[in-house]
Image (cartoon, rainbow, N blue to C red):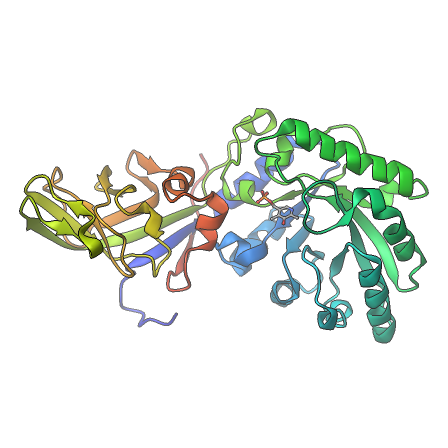
Length: 383
Ligand SMILES: *Cc1c(COP(=O)(O)O)cnc(C)c1O
């Protein structure tokens, strides 16, 4: 969104690219050396901004990028003309002819997709790499694991397709280790049963997302991981492998104090007057609301840092403004910085806490920061 250069920011996200780089290096160091690092940068790199994030990840040693769809792949092609890109989502029939043009690797789940892609690649006279996706219990993309044989054979006999990988996705790696283990078993059974003739050295075999890294098998055929959230410094679960990885938050969410004022006890705050002041109060009106991605669910629940102290959100979050209680902080003045997610002095509101109070998950919080909010890139010194 354009803005005269001299105007200050009212609400912004700060993105620490040096922390991102350190996170990638630490995750890599915790993994067996042969593991390829697939950097998941879908949804504008989880709201952090695709260009800056992908460039820094490539510079830091990512082996491959994963995106949700072809238009994200096309955006990535603009910055990395020869970077390997895996499209995780299913292509629409009319998108298939663009896959050879963008030189992407496509995820396939059905014989029908294989046949259509083969025709598209033949028409373009170019070979196309595909990854076969196995549904081991997510119930979303992928061929159901008991029915993988025909899709596998269709790929192998397609003249213009080359099988470059086989993968699955976990539904519950953050809270159900037993089911995750069952998914791994189902996946390995497919590899043994259907793909026994494969040269596994030449294939990417992958299953683990950030939470999956907890139970990753160091031995076995897996030779790649798909990391999204963890590279941004957010831990999906506290766990063994990852507890060694000192991941630092990359994202913080900031606004300003637009106005400070006194209100008498008994005043109702914001739309619907869902909070009634119990005492004579000082309130600060922040320059951010749900139009910036502050979820309405943190109304009357969330906290914001001002002057390094936690201040409760009063009443409903509105489109452009959020009201907080600063009665106990007489030093607060208009223009002060306010932190919705991140650090200020010694205090911190972690993204996980903010997301919990918003009844959501960190992934959704990051994707909900709107395009009104500029992303400012900075480079912190190492810790
Ligand atoms: C988004 C996604 C990932 C990354 O998940 P995180 O939990 O953010 O690490 C991995 N694999 C697939 C198929 C995905 O859609």
